[in-house]
Each structure stands twice: as C-alpha cells, then as structure tokens.
Image (cartoon, rainbow, N blue to C red; front, top):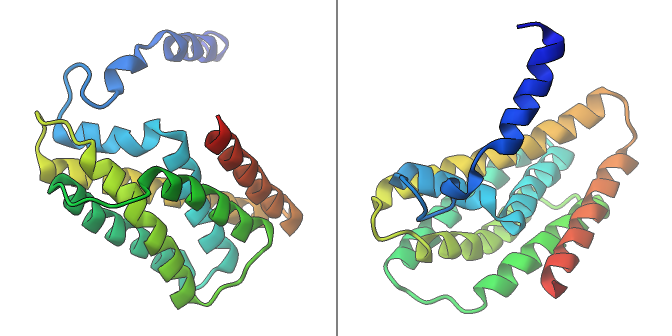
Length: 194
C-alpha cells in the first residue's frame, strides 16, 4: 500500500473504531485493560498527569523521576483504599484542583524543591487514585487493575516530560511551556464549571 493511501486509511480506521468498548465495564475487558483505560479516558486525569510530567521536566534533575514516582505511589495506595471502600472526601473537587494547581505551577514556572513538589503531587494523587479504586468494575481483578492504571499514569507523566524536553530541544522559549501550563489551567476551570 502506498504512503498516500496508508495515511488516509489509518485515519479512517481510527475514526470508525468503536472506542465505547474501551470504557471501564463495557464490552470484554480485563482488569489490566480497565485499569489502563481509566486514566486515559478521563480528561481531568490526563491533564493532571501530563501536567505532573511537564512540571517535573521543567524543574529537571531529580524531580523528573521523584515527582512521577510520588504520584504513582500515592495513587496506587489511594486506589487500594478506594477498592476497600475507605471513604475520602472531596475526591472530584480534589481532582479538578489538581489540574488547576499543577497548570498554575507550570504557567508560573514554579521551581519547588524536590521534596515539596513530591508532597504536592502526592497529595493530589490521593484523589486520582481513590477515584480509580472506587470505580473498579466488580468483574475484574484488582491487582491487574492497579497495574493498569499505574502504567497508564506513568506513560502520561512520560508524555509530559517528553513534551518539556522536546520544547527545550527545538529551541522554543520557556514561554511556550508556560503557555501550556496556562492552557491546562483554562481546561481545568472549564471542567470545573462545565
């Protein structure tokens, strides 16, 4: 197949796919697949998790591994608590606040100490993890579900770090990265009022 046909064919295939079956609890899913798709299908989760990577990439050095690790670790812990039925107040407002606060950190080019950034992202990870844990379908395995959403989250953090590194490599000014943070804030506000 020639390249001129392959690209439109791939786009058409993507547009005609049935993503509804990828939603948690719909169609034939496994614990891993359900867990993996949960963060990816929530725009609030995607924004916050990519923002963690952007902010970590902006600060650099140890923050690039410590902040994503803190987020994933606390998220898994909160996911287990959610699965066990342990309540956590203000989960949805906490998730929306994470998008806005992390976007602001990027927009303001906040260079927090590594320990403080880990505390901030870890705190917000509690809300994301609890939401994942309480929404686990009864028909899937818990451990596989945890592994799935932890891996998806790590990948989203990696996308944020890669965006940050890519922006630096192509020589685009730091203003572009800060503008991305501003867009995250705007999207968070839109989700909060929408």
